[in-house]
Image (cartoon, rainbow, N blue to C red):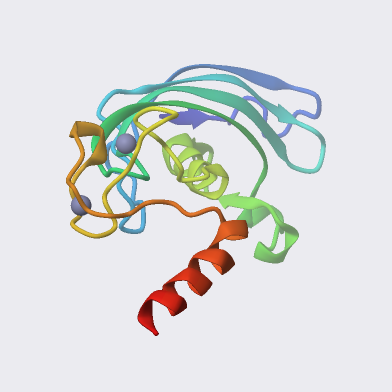
Length: 171
Ligand SMILES: [Zn+2]
Ligand SMILES: [Zn+2]
């Protein structure tokens, strides 16, 4: 989604309302597996604060990713906010100013949204809160049934005792 900011770029206090769709299908995600096959909704505004443009927006929608525990493909909710300052390189802004630089009079929101998403996401999406994950021994999906491997969790407080018993057995 490209936004033409020519109407506000010279007018302090002016703003443009954002209400549209972002297309992040082609966003680069550094090898991570987030797929945005459907457009995301974006709403908010771009405001001229006299020095730069303030972009404030909320992005919502759905994406496909994989469960962090069992790696099954899942649909996850996307809901994040963007708060960024933007300025034109030709207006004297430098990359060290912590601003997003743009050229001309158009701002490409898809790329900005993709960057903000990557910075803010925890990466921890689960197919369900009580996903059992994969068996550490054989790799099978424990949500689909027990595999018979002995992965019993031992309370650390009992581990010392278990070790002593094991030692006695071995001797
Ligand atoms: Zn899972
Ligand atoms: Zn197993």
